[in-house]
Image (cartoon, rainbow, N blue to C red; front, side, top):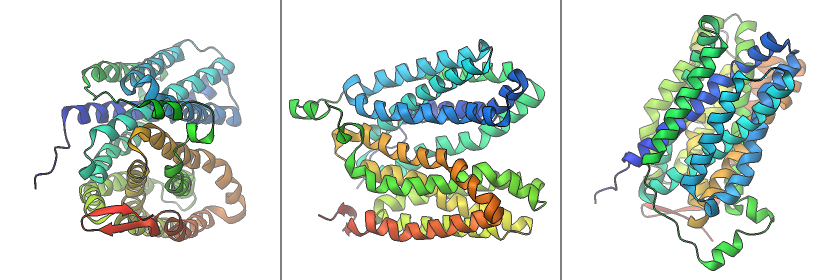
Length: 399
């Protein structure tokens, strides 16, 4: 039986738009604290707030976008999100104090949350059901690549070209994404009166897809584990005198994500999510354990490979499961539910884990997170794994 086509024009346009969206996000994220310090003489805490308030804007926007995207329209929401993101990025040229910077960072984050929720919802509609895991995996590469190249280029531009060039590049990339989505063709979704009635009101059901919450709870701990790497890896490698090798950590990480993604996505569809989730959680936990015990460069790079295989697969598979278990008319809410929980884990990580470092040290931090991820094996089983029953070539939810 011939599989439905996956790499269509529309799939590639949405994936490219999402790549440039996250590429811009990372270009700004790694440089905005330096901008706040250099331009407005911000204290470390104020500069940190300039970075973190963006994530707050993202989370709030996801909350309301997930609820309204089906009524407003998927494509229209993407247009508005990208336009808002373009305008607020242009405003970086006009901020003249910390107050206006913080306000603009919040609005910039809100527009990012709006646009990224739309791209995730649209791609979920474009991907054939028979290739859900594979397609979501390929789509997630847009974020993985942006997360690896964006920070590197951002720091390079700040060092050699300055903030203005960095902001100008961001504007150019967003403008390109905005123009490209005009060529998208998305089937119009029709809703019955009963479905439209369910979208009204301000209950928990109207802001979250309840069926996506169990797997999204796992997403909190996945995001928490990854935030320990994003936030403290540089300091850790400096402490253990492996700074030069540490700079290659994310390169190894990306290589293993790219190599594994075609296989893991296909296995998700053919063998079921449990065949992917259990090994991936274990590999992520193992990667954090190896990181905690690293004394030589090889161990550090091995940890990068294990994290790429583990976390790199979990982030895509979790999103695929959240969509899979939810009603078709609530794909937008399912997508935003997953990312609210996942981004929440990444967002609260620096604060929670930062309190652990003075007590346990960096090695103790990564050992603790390894244990937390191992516990997620049992949590996943209780929340989702035991309900996923394989029947022939199709995985269904047990009633």
